[in-house]
Length: 111
Image 1 (tube, helix red, strand yellow):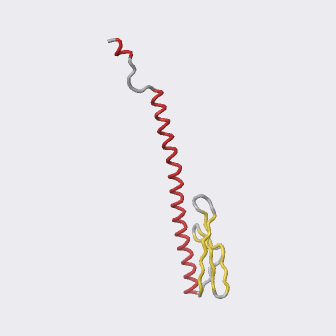
Image 2 (cartoon, rainbow, N blue to C red):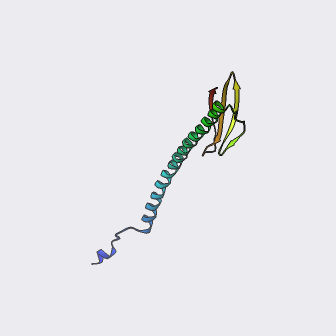
Image 3 (cartoon, one colour):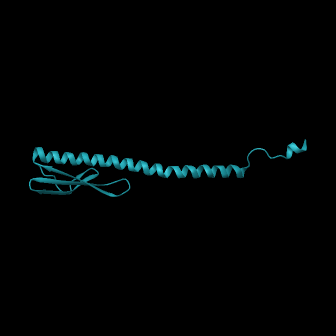
């Protein structure tokens, strides 16, 4: 009877803390890469919106003969470069992405 009372069965506090630390480490290792993946997906979405802004500016030039103005802000995006040579227009749209990097996308159009 005394042998069964002296046996330690179950988890001790130390074992619980070690297992909890292990679980937290695994969660920490998984969250950071997932956060980077989400930011890069958002950056792709921002690039698609920039392409839409660029296409709209080029279409306005083609159909209305209205030149976009350099430095014009369109929400998060702004027109960073406008040049016209030999009846061809070059328009560049710039923005800052989710990782605070400067991104630029350019488009060309003939009248």
